[in-house]
Length: 257
Image: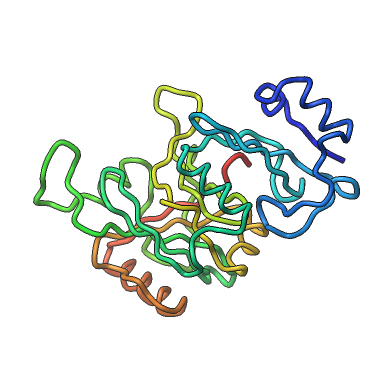
């Protein structure tokens, strides 16, 4: 009932792969690395998922119905967050995560009603004006930079944004790890945004992700959305941003799917 993909086998070696398939190192009962619900590799199809950092790797297991067997490249910092997830440590529920890339970005997770259906969403908002790389401003070009990468203007939240090829959202071990962008000069996707520590999300959000297998990612300039305490207020803020022409979005699959 255990699936070891060719890419996982290439990383762990044939000997270890055969031990897993033979049951010697099979997990038996486990917590799914995607939905966190219990699984049993002896009773239901199970995927092996290998998280690979710069120096270390962690082998985890998931329901085959949640995610396929795959190798997930992550930073060493993300990998430590994944290990903390296994041991029950990690970010607190409802935390608004921030990360330093070229700018400080705030990322909030929530459910959004779009066209009568409930979708898992991420809302990205910088903590300050974004200048074009190589300059110091003063013009905020955050939306221009995103539209140049394929994000589309959102004028009506009743229509989900179009998929953005090559981009994906990494949800693993029941937590949000990163938004990945297409590789630049390499084979592995790169983190456009990554949580300082694996970000815990609400059970309802995780259930919606497992159902839709995609996440709607919205982005707005600093001061447009804010940290809304309720999802109805978040939706109202998104509607105002869309009406004002200050919202872009894209639909992204889960990483590796």
